[in-house]
Amino acid sequence: MKKSELSKWYTIFVTVFLLCACSNRDITEDIPSNGNSSHLSVITRGVDDGGEVSYPVAVYIFNADGCCAVETLETEEDNLSVSLPEGSYELYAIAGASTEDYDLPTQAAATTTSMVALKEGKTHSDLMCAHATATLTDGADNSVTLSLKRKIMQVKEVTIKSVPAGTAEVSVCIAPLWENIKLDGSYDGEGGKQELTLTKQADGRTWKNETAVNCLPSVGKPSITISITKDGTKKEYTYVCTEELEANSKLTFEGTYTEEIQVTMTATVEGAQWGENRTVSFEFNGSNTATVPPAASTVSAGDIYKGCYVLAVNGNKATLLSPNEKMGPFNKSDSEETKQEKLATELAKNGVDGIDGWRVMTVAEAQLIHGNFSGINAILTENSISNIKNSVSYMVSDNGALKKAELSASLFQLEDSLDGYTYLRPVAEVTLDE
Image (cartoon, rainbow, N blue to C red):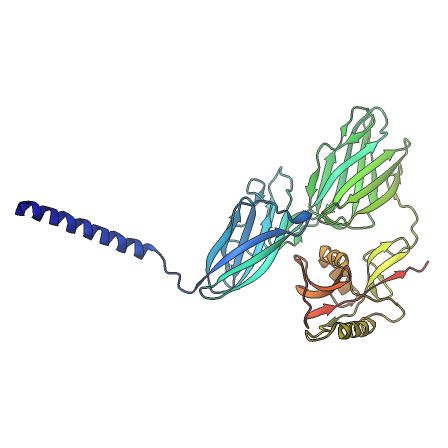
């Protein structure tokens, strides 16, 4: 090969080498250094309805300076992982709220109490919320589980039977309901309502809603108003519920128009995998006000009875929540026998004189407190009774097994282990005075 040709190939080789070297240097400089960063993986799971999760799931990550990241899982196939500086973080998730139906807070504006507002003309989807904390250390891989709880109830079916011929319109209104939900899972606005226009069925005498509808739970004990329009005249019949309509409930209402001046209405609250089953029956007549069948007792859930909060009433039986509580009756080293001895002592000590049978609250009773956390504490405060503490663990009985439940207005999480920071707040069942 001639010298000139060698020189030419050498020049080309050096040029290519330098270009490659420069290119590699530029790429390296463009990659940001991790510094004191950690890898956070987020796992979502549903607490209700067999563990199903509503999508999309928007996860807001907060540190001491505010919202530092917003990540979204669009489907169950998506994984959520993010690199963050070491430190402590609060994670809040809102599931089932698409941007087509809801106005979601931006990262710049988000706080833990930001509104997740339903857009005009839209109806609520299967909303779920969760909260978790994470502490990240330098260079570590961390994972956190967001346990999502349903925050809506569903009016599954409303049926009015034997409606008089010539009726032009039948509708139902449930109010008051919560108007909005916040990022932390709490509710806001007490003027909400759910109206349903019923459709005449093929027999001409039955009126029914065409589709189920999701709505936020009730504010206290709501009213159910049935409007029947005939010959240009609208008559309204109103019943005031004896219990709140809670999240994670499916409701079926069935009414039968027995006479021109009287309607009998039966409401069934259906739980399935959503929650507990319960049935509410009531009657109302043409006077346009509710007539409630006589009860075995005037005491109802939410009352104070013998210095205790009434969690639930079934006929002439009531479940009472003690005004007293004790933190950490157990040590990790205690034997099962020692635990039972300490438990018996603390149940008696933290009960109320004159009431027997104090025991550990069940999981269902703890969930009942979680579902009406703010309402219960408001009544306890009004009656100068110690509140249910926010975001601490309470001892529960899970089919006889003692466990702890992290309990707050926005979170209910069951764990197997007990420790010295688990609170005991006894409950008892009593026969009500006539």
